[in-house]
Image (cartoon, rainbow, N blue to C red; front, top):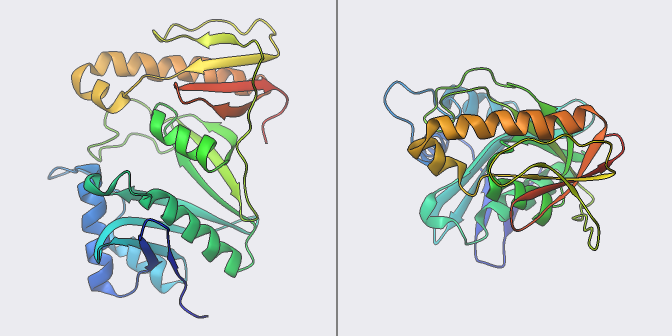
Length: 260
């Protein structure tokens, strides 16, 4: 199969990565994104990146001005899907469309192989990721996964359970869901207080403005937010609500109906 290379309007160039030297640079970049310390687990081990690449799975790199600034890696999954296991963009390159370019390259790679969806997980507390995944890309939440990865010691996710949202993104597209002029019952407010949904048809759930800074400055506060979203957002999904969107101001929007 011919090499797939895409170029974003921003001038970001994305291609698949091959060979140990390229994969070593990819692993090093991801460690920098995660700010891993000596003794921390890496976001993904070099030997696994090498295995992914050799086995025909996805390992892509984004270049800006000829420099590697973003990496994503994933594997083929059940249901004709590419599961994106890890993705990261170097801090100086953020805001240049690198993340979007990597996702579009993944989708093109999946389409080229007859796959139907790209899936991944993300931390529901990280507001910018929720907005990017749900509002910009139009990915759909299909599950809330309590402590999905178990205890993590990678420098970024230390402390507390690794709750995640699982999303799917159709290869044929994905459109953000917009809902305006409606009244939403709050299930987690801006302080992290949890409230009962009380059978309301529409719900909203707040997120902290910057949970990564909160983890550094107030670990106990970050843990309280983790527990709040587990009870509020996770609880609502367990009751059969589905996530319909995410606002610029950091609110998950939910409606009655089974998750999909």
